[in-house]
Image 1: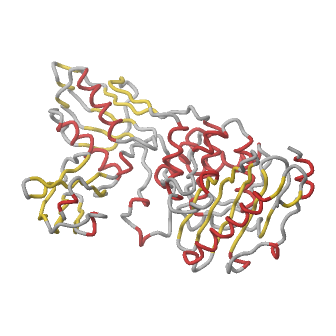
Image 2 (image 1 turned 60 degrees about the vertical axis):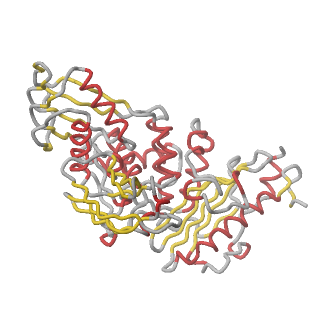
Image 3 (image 1 turned 180 degrees about the vertical axis):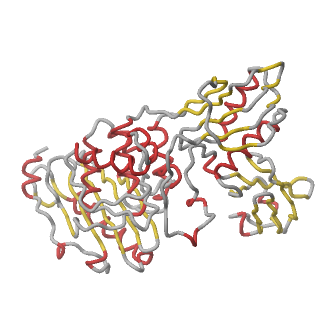
Length: 461
């Protein structure tokens, strides 16, 4: 490739050369550049600090891969200082979490299986949750209207199953049956469902009304037989209460007895390990977080960065580590404002240039494959499953969506091996109406980049 000729020919496209497809010039920020070289191909309001919504997860992901490395894992332990007599643990059992972003039911099952392998069948004391891995949890202020929605789940060092239980619906012998996974101790299921008329199921919530309280989940309505095996999720409890209820529910479902209640506390220094679970590595976590834009996972990863940096305020320590990582990469952090590293924020700000330079650094770095693999693929998966199908799998973009924000950031991989970094962020009162226009802006940048003949630095045929 004659990159020198190609990059020499490229000049930063001025605003008037960009078709904004009806977006007002002061409502969008754009930065686009080839991964190779130092040229910038297109920039519009690129140094203005804007709200990036969930594209902020890209910054958190890059810092995590850089500082923690792809092989980083989280440990979850059960500890006690009590003796075991017969099949009984005579005292309290401490559950020590470290903020694993993807601590699902299978991880909890594995911990409980280790207790049973030790011959323990009865927990004679309390279950004590130790979430002291994080000195503070940070905030996501300004979302009161969304209280109770899954994306608003608060982080916790013991976050289990992303604080959600699956409510399954089954049809048998002309009757409806409900099941909760995982079972939650103290949460009663009340089934007021009936089998409805034949027809397509679709989203099961179209057919049922679900009342969710900390002690009760009540479902009523008429479900078509086609809804057999369908599911939806519920979030009846706070993260700590959910973790305790899931632990006790699964323990008792497998024939265990006890514990005598639960609480929150610190693990005694003299305790010993009775069970331990090691997470999958960070590189396996990031696709779940970025392809499906999980705010709880991103907030836990941000807090993990703070924990790794040490200090007395985990979110503030994470902020410090992000800025030092940017400085080491010689990326100007001007305009950056962090609240929780997930983009679930009215306060977070970043410039399109900063985010673009992070993407370029990630593509040039030793963990570029892990970073790229975490992004949604256009027309195929995650939050891009139904977008950019015409451009296909060479387009890898993280999406960002908030009231007043629509954002896209990632890469176009040209057939000849060239790579283009793309960042386009709309901040506007009616941003949701500009989604199609934003997609068109990105599509134009891709098509223009793809049309260049890199062998002679002139526009393609």
